Length: 152
Image (cartoon, rainbow, N blue to C red; front, top):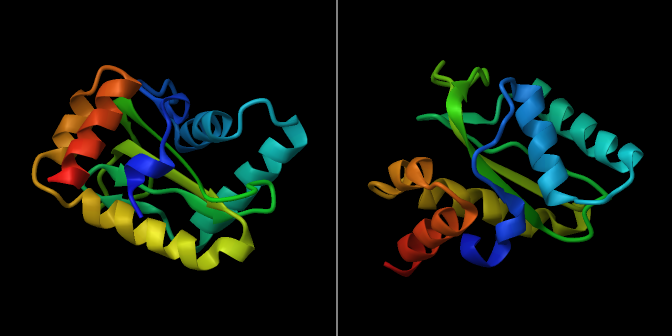
């Protein structure tokens, strides 16, 4: 499973405009599910906040991977982005986050969901990639950094 296969330019937001955890989550949900009815979007946001209430998905080093299982997503969906200023995300290391990957999927894709979370985590450990993603000025540069990292 490659992140470059799960992401698309329209689901990468560089820069994210949100200044709070909730604003960033809502912006990523809008990118992941464009044109969906407000009630569906709100259901996804609620599912993400419920997951955050269990344990923050701010994994440290300025990275957050909000994720939830939801019937609104017909399959595995990944959206991503960066913020120009780090956002307080209740991360495990206490640092604010500025690099975000939102993962959504139906309960029926639970195995793929876990594999994707693992893949995101592994890819983001690669030397220099986090910096390249933070320096990306648009979705194409962001996606190119991921694709080059995965191919190397």
